Length: 367
Image 1: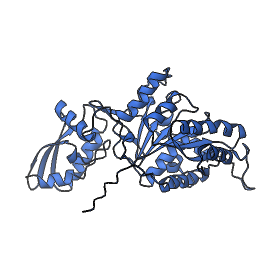
Image 2: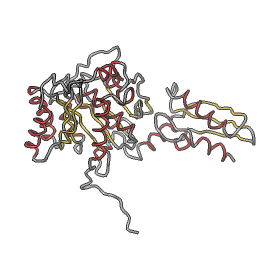
Image 3: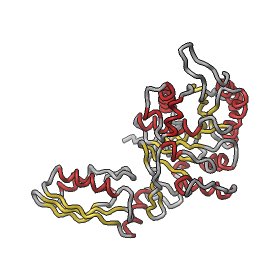
Image 4: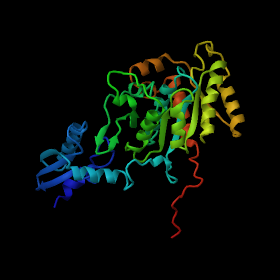
């Protein structure tokens, strides 16, 4: 019997799959005595990027119980990998989009902007990390195929692990991340047309092991092009969060990014005004004018027939820019910064937003 060893190994969590290795078929034969144990650990693939951390955690867990520990690191057989992918998919077919299911309770949020340069990706990354820090299970999909920047902003330089036909997304700051940037070498541009764009974003949904998420944030490309339309069709229950700046001209363009969501069936979740003002000893300095966020919220309220809230105003912050350049989200690197405080407040607002359970089975038992 190897009850003591299995109990210890049950505390070891695979860093990519976020489940105990004892539940993933990763534990092979165990030989234990009162003082010694020898165990085989089966990694998902050869060259698994998490191999060193798994071995370290296994040795540490076993050392709490046994004086002498030997660990044999090996890899799964093809049949074992196939069995694992079936388990991870929950016996659902391959090429399955879990977020389109009626009973899926993940809150999918499209973060959009009418044009580039308004800080959309930076805010998306920081909102994702803030939500994770607040205890939420978060995924981040970088759908800005041509202008991908999420890997740099969140500080991920590791490619997804491929297990059979399933991709395990890298995790940074407890956020699961997928981006076309993981598959492009040397910062090469992506020159794709509509069908290839649609296929790429579809694969990000169907071929990636997202697991059970509370939130999936989707960083949309600016504007109203093919990717926004494709994702609107693939994720019909998503809601749109519109990013604008205070400028009147920027607000006019931002309205369009919210309006395209209405055309593809997405509700408007709210508006965020970025670069709202520069804090100073004499009060806020409105470098880019004022009123843009309020104007976008009012116009989208009119278009949608439902009240659209201005969820927050992010001040101009040099530290926010520096943290982005340093690949460290400001909500982690400097949570006391004024921009970080406002982003975290907005994250709490998102958590307080009702999931929208209409039409979903709550699986309540009357017995």
